[in-house]
Image (cartoon, helix red, strand yellow):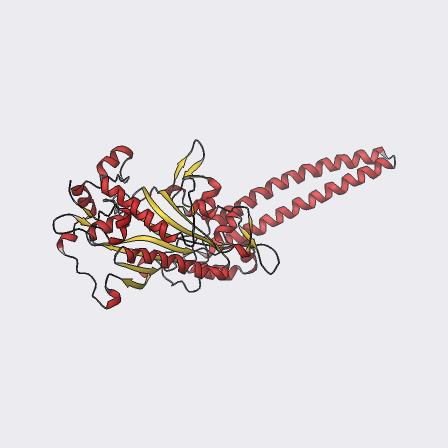
Length: 434
């Protein structure tokens, strides 16, 4: 969340910045008013508390002086003021909670160099790559046999069974079989091996506490998108970003430790509320999928480099897999609430005839670490500083799986996988019908 001091010191600057995201000035003005009210109520409580302490001191003096009548009167007054202090404390707590809730709903300030825009149609394409593009070859002209959607290819080759997945868990829960399941495992191993040089592998819990989900900005605003186990008050994670952001919750790190880099493979769960009837065929939009995440705690000076590293690693995997992709610089109107700057990676799937988002690489400033209370001690001394966070997928497998199956389909109906996967597929790169 934003630093409340920023809203106190420069509310107009905050309003100008958030207006780039479409946030109405009224939201900021209301938060500033609430903060003024909260501080006034807390001030009244503290004043009453000081009065109670002073009266207690006077009671003691009166008793030592043998003036029991004065001591009794002062004691009665202290009780009345004490009741007022407790009521004032309750009022102050309520208003402080309202301020915190308003802060939790307010999005991050976008980066200065994030392109302005009102929605996804105004995202900026930074670059595009396809096999042979470095040598000047034209973009692929997809033949007819690669224009078959992956859900049909998967059914024909018995490697994707959406019908049985729905029978087990409901619609939009895929079931992978045989070589299809092995392909997922191969992609995961490929990615984790590629990142092991700089990122510590973490195997985090899949269910987390409410405060863990709140730290990343997924709660309270996006509660309807998440799966909640109400009996235990636990949440199924929508991304490994959630547990990784809270890995050092409440800790103070040393600047010399930064950047701290982590990677994790997790199952991710998303309700996709409002998605009914939209892009729900096959793996285009699913409730459960596997994803390798890259995450870094960094200083503000290190954050740009950390984001560039994650983006480069995601692109490197896409190139190794031979997938046509593009990089989008998200405009302010399409940024996720906690993000200051985001680059999306989209692969082209010829059978689905669309670009599929497979990674979002985002810088959050200290928006998340203020919630998670993750700070570091500056090397030059001084008070602890909130760390910046950066994260991105490298990569999310459901749509990568779909693109590989569609791009690798041959005229005889078989699928040929990229050579880079051979060590993880038992050297068998051709998937044929059983």
